Length: 235
Length: 209
Image (tube, rainbow over all chains, first blue to last red; front, top):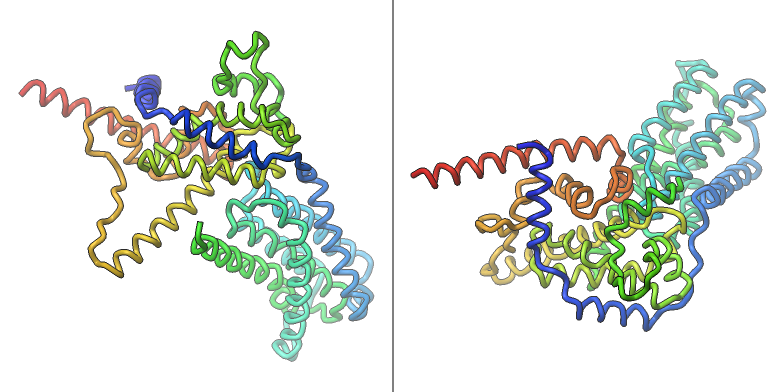
């Protein structure tokens, strides 16, 4: 039996399946026609991603300004160029992925989970390349405030991004949560790179890179809760 | 990515089932109808509902649901499409957008149905579990043929072979990649081949005895 035979079987079976009731189609058409008014389509993916990128950049710059730009001052020209270039690239990809999640049927180049792992590993690679100092003092005592600051910024950014994205429809809320969480986490990470003067590898790899990772995981949990809540609500 | 017009027209030609008596001019593409629907044209909305409903209904029926359930899902899909019609980007292929919404609703519906069934079982301990399939029926039923396939492979086959969507369109509708769609289609065909060959062998044996 070849593929053409299987196609024939499927077509025959589809032909014998019950047809949709014309009265039902009429009822749907009338129901739609009764509440019809013009709508403005969503902007293009690029415009939406640019809006998200602007929110993330503005939040990171604002946080850096308020907390003090100690990190970038200590970093040096080459290191800051590499770190912020990598952050900008990953932020743009995450913004595109987030916007694709709220437009049904849009093209997906990479799954948000994979993107999250690539972001964390990519930023780790840049940090290992640019910074040194594997042995660090007060590892936890210095790390916790950084983590708290980065996550606070990420949560605020996620709320801002949501205000842009809520016009769309997330057909897979969990993966949408991962993408938005990763993007917001990158904004928190950018703010920390501007602010935190501790450039030791151990500190940056664990406490700074944890922010996009935790952002993605938190986003997934929120997406899961949203989906569960929606399925519990009455029709 | 914008599709070349020829691709859109050829892949959607079979879906434009407007009556030939309506006009001698070629039927407008579903994408064009959708753009007019977004602009508030009720004729275009009605034409789109008439054009896409048969294949959406078939898509739901292929998932082992009863006709009544498929009718409900079809209505709810159109209501959702109506609510989120602004999320369609003119110039993009329409079918992936429609099927992504339809799949989302179906999953949501099944989740609700499972929850309701679970509650009924807990409260009464007498409710019968939902009848998932008519797979034991001897007839050449679409859902019976597709019953043995996992959900993702079933969706892929229905969209590719029965709705006439391209690999790229199926990938968009299922939030996956073209490579993954190809792999699912290949596995589904292998499984269908085995099942159909086994079935025809058994019927030959029955005939001989």
